[in-house]
Image 1 (cartoon, rainbow, N blue to C red):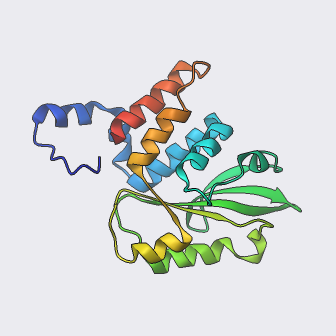
Image 2: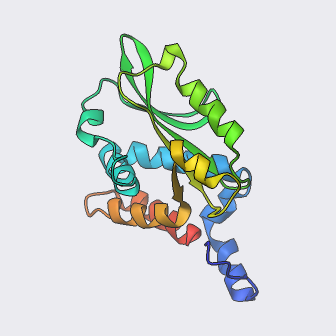
Image 3: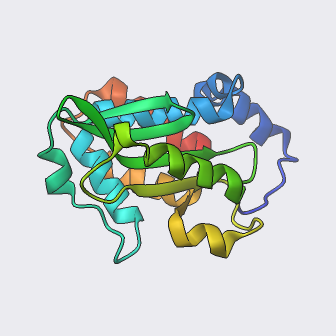
Length: 189
């Protein structure tokens, strides 16, 4: 994916067009990936949170057990322009625990990310614990990367695919769901 390989081989292009995940993704690439991550959440919340834990650097790890113990743990797509956010219910309000900003077609810019942090910090979403911010991106280099890394955990799609393979290869998963996951990781690879 990020190895800058050119798709000059007509056989490779033909295989890409045969992949249903590729075809489905053509409409809105970022929304497609956000929807697929929400699908993974629905398949297995614990696997999803373990995958996120694995992807985060030391010192910024989430507490999977604590999160799973929270009331009404839910994933939302496009909540106030946040691509994905994982929330729990506290005093009958959504409290944001994790924000995932998905950058597929564009590069991240610090002003937009700061705006998203402000959204997650609104009083109606205020959480008793710190929010984990994840920037999921195709780009490995972009402006203000060091400044962004202070507040956001940068994860590439290459890293995500490896983690999906690790946490979603299960013998007890319905074969059809397993096939969707394999098709997705093949498409990203």
